[in-house]
Length: 455
Image (cartoon, rainbow, N blue to C red; front, side, top):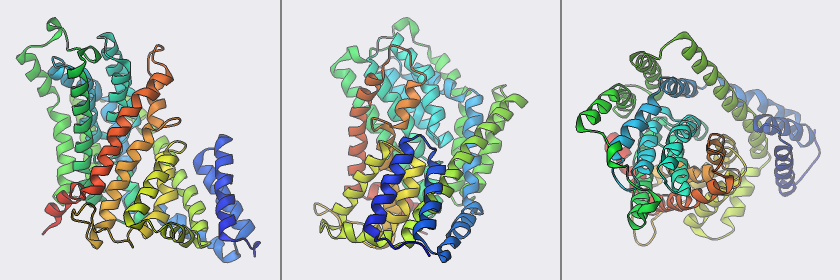
């Protein structure tokens, strides 16, 4: 039997300990798992030790998690096939004649790539290598160029097939397919907001994003040739998402189809060889292992806190604010943005979802400004989509937003960290606008699932 401690003090000590070990540079998976075991030993009882196998083993054997390595392999194989480079080449030659056309092309290419990949790193880094020098060479504003790449790259965790949606669904015990479908319109909404913003800025001030010189523009025949080269990868994306949306296959089965299709696309691009497959497999192994270690560690940490009464403590504390359902939701959104400044999305997901979801699904959301609200049976799906939109902001939040450092790692020396920080701010405001729209107008997240699942 461990020492007795009040839940208030336990909350304080667990929070401070986590901050200290993360600042010391310990990986999140080991930090949360190690601290969970220490607090279990110090303040738990022997019965609580059952938490270790009883919470981890179901995660290890969860069928839906099989989609994670498959989609990561699919994304990595498409990257090795040169699809991202060809995709940007196609879009920028189609749109380059417009003001801000290259920045718009970066967003559009990232949106399409998000539907192929479901991860951020590959798109962010590759677009930083290809699109950023192309824009700087043509005298684009560095802040506009960096912002377009940063914001477009974050769409990878929202637009299906999203790895975030898979992990969220597993932890919150929801349908992966419904989350995929619910995230489509919000993802396209954010992408549209980025394009509209770039177009307006460059229309008002053309020097921010001048169009391509006439001599660099391509003929209609060349545009058709470029489009023909992208038929295979776009067909693959349509096939993978189509079999999920129509119910023909589960997300895991669709991931298997996508993995095989990525190999076919690589072969069609003459990039399929043993070295490419081996590198893609190793990248998948490392990424999946990192995600699962964080899942295991955070499961122990949060599991002990919940068993100690932490979930009730947080719920009572939020309810005591008397801010109503939407006020509590805004507090949760603010906490996610705050955490996003210091933690990666997997850690945020594991630390907050088990505590937030039971509370949010118990609250009524009757609408704001006289607009229709959310039916009780749809709150879980709506909140899942809102949660994913909110995490977009965490990737761009200074000082430690992950996308900021992905881009800095490949940016030319003249693009400073301060420039990248400044470039993220307008797009964070656009993401906040998209988040507000999804909260005020829940139909944005719920309309498409209703149409598909109405039968």
